[in-house]
Image (cartoon, rainbow, N blue to C red):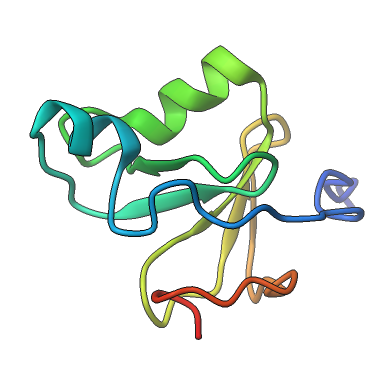
Length: 100
């Protein structure tokens, strides 16, 4: 049995820095397909299907390992370090437009 990711164990998630969209896309006037929320610092970035791929770029620049989907109705997370998909994912106390 593979070892499970430990990065989600002690999450104290931050509220999103830009609750209306991808931080970099909003600044540059870009667009996104889906949004991802960094559970370490609250950065909102766009997914890998978006032109900017800002969520993954944020991981490479910050080394913040864990994120969650920031799409309404989606309840999953991803660990970049362990390449592990987690569903369902706890809310960690976040109450946002996407996750009431």
